[in-house]
Length: 240
Image 1 (spheres, rainbow, N blue to C red):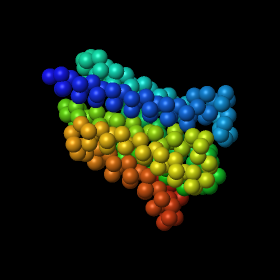
Image 2: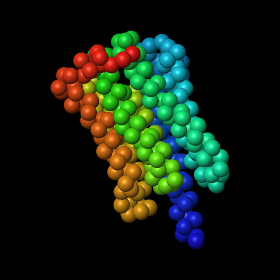
Image 3: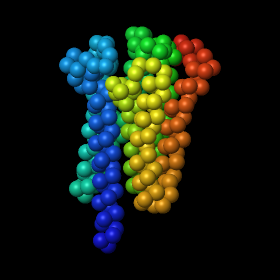
């Protein structure tokens, strides 16, 4: 029993630390443009915060707060509150998807983009991340009675919010090489989950496998549509 208890404690520490790492990564990236707007101006000029951008930032921040709180509730063995908060968390996570879509289209209309791309092509980055996020959310909801799968899908959903933050770290220059490097860094956030699977169950969990493929799709699909030159035509017909 002591070994089982130790395993549970290790699992709680793992998810709690992952939540903290994600929060730190996103805060560093979005400090100049959101959290510390007009206080921290480095590394680049940041456009004014519109109501839609503020709503998106608050929704994502709310999700991160809920995700961390959920790890603490499990650690405190308050699964009753965990389940109640989980319903609201799933609703907020579901709301993040259409808000992200609107913010992405809003950014295209505002012509906000890094210097190595244009607004229409750059919108592929957030828009093509939405299908994998939706998949993780659906799978997380469907597996809510399977704790091991559920917590992995929720972690994977949260990991898919990391890239925009990491991409804004000042160590990555605003050039295509910098974008690719930041994407690799963001993708690497899944490595601890892979290692945890190997340590805890001796193999990759089914949820982790699905998440790996979904995350890779989100990163690779943009380069495919860029190479084909079709994305501006796609964006032109999207509703907004």
